[in-house]
Image 1 (cartoon, rainbow, N blue to C red):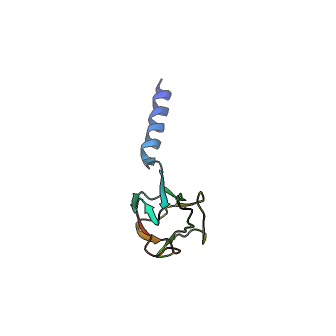
Image 2: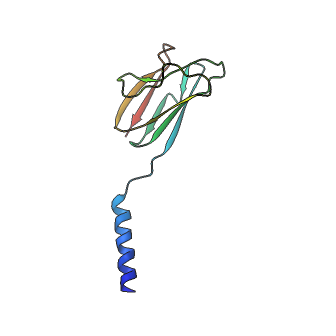
Length: 108
């Protein structure tokens, strides 16, 4: 019994020390010359998937203004770009094909 109690306490200590939250997945849609949502707040380690779901079949891309992340130059409706966040900060991004199509990713 003493061994079992010690083992359980050791496991609980390891779990509580780890204390990191599970990473989450988020989606940003691109439709009608907008990023939806236009501003997204996530935690470091989370994944953001940018999906071209444009009902007008427009090509898009996504590029952080500080070049910290960028998709391929063109992706069509149904294609996506996946970005795993690695550092905290505020990242403004845009579709370089469509001036005025902007968004903000806030990583805490």
